[in-house]
Image 1: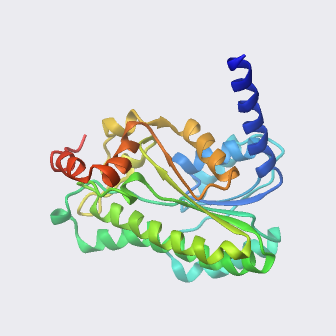
Image 2: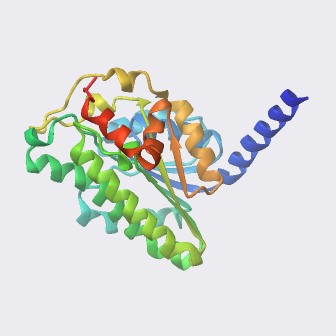
Image 3: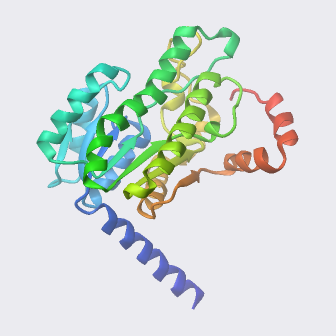
Length: 281
């Protein structure tokens, strides 16, 4: 009996997710790899109309080709750190698709270097892509959300947006900034019928560590053991979309590393001791 009820509830949950995204126009940044790519496949299978952005147009083409046939997918190559170009790009997209229902601010870049070894230009680059890029995208689309009196804004933060860890000082700072901005924005937009969901991933098995920046700005080009053993991107995407469809304000998605958030709240001294002994792996 318990198994039957659990199966029924799971089916209802899946149907709810499908209904939520069916026919919705979803703009995803950072859509050419990792979490963004996995979201594309899952959303396409759930009947969403996709607008995909990333810097590499050829990789966007690859993602589009791998999506189920018969769905509307628009490709919009874009560097979110090119703030000046974003308003015009947004207006162009709106003129083509009419409106955006859901914006997923997923574009980001990680870090693998000690603060003392990291040049200021790298700190700036990470803040520009992760934080300011998300702010710029959100502000470019905010007027149409407000005028339509509906919409959903999603910010992909991180566990390190709650807990600062060694070798990720700038990355952690950018995600902490995202937390503050989108929490404030959520409160401001509550009466406008616009949802804001913050997703905080733990380790996800993507190329994020390979593409992370070292202190000199070069790619790290190593697969961390913790990243490699993280959630599969496809599994993460399903969990993330379930949280969005439920219009959750915040969701922590990962494995045991999620416990760090609760340690930070209830046992901070223990967490600080753990972090002092943290080693990059």
